[in-house]
Image (cartoon, rainbow, N blue to C red; front, side, top):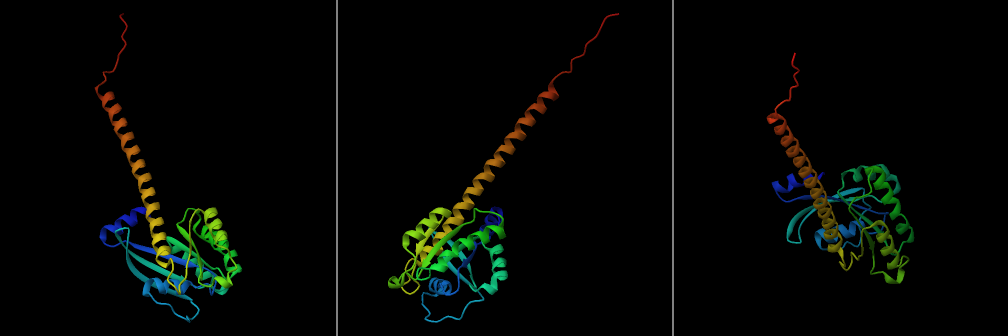
Length: 221
């Protein structure tokens, strides 16, 4: 959705934000989304192929409607995953702090987003889930922070069980999308002002040419 489309949608009602959560199977993506939407933790959840959730929230005093696509983490659903990526305005890249491999895959998800979307500047956050399982930790907090700094995005360690930082993740990505839209709007406004100024200058010189008397040279015979 472009900035102009976003503005038009907002003018018609509550702005809809399309979010996609990505990560390997078993990292707790569904548990995070369900905790955010329903305020409950499921001990068991069937492996996701594709689930979509909607939730309204007021973020920084402004209403928002979140359309969250919970994606499959299994390798056999890679083609479907690329379809999700074309729809998303913001991405949540999730790994488990108890699974080193899931952390290593985060960068691969980022590269896949860039390849599918053909751009790098896309709102995203990195989430290290299951921080309640400290005794099974394989990924240090500092590693998650360093990766987020490298990618220029926010980082959160969460627990779907304890509901720790769950709201922060979803509110944070909405803030990033809004910030980017404001920046794009400012650029559009500057471009519009430049075009308007250029037209004014052209019009000024055109008026000068209208009132300027043509000069004629004559020779006496």
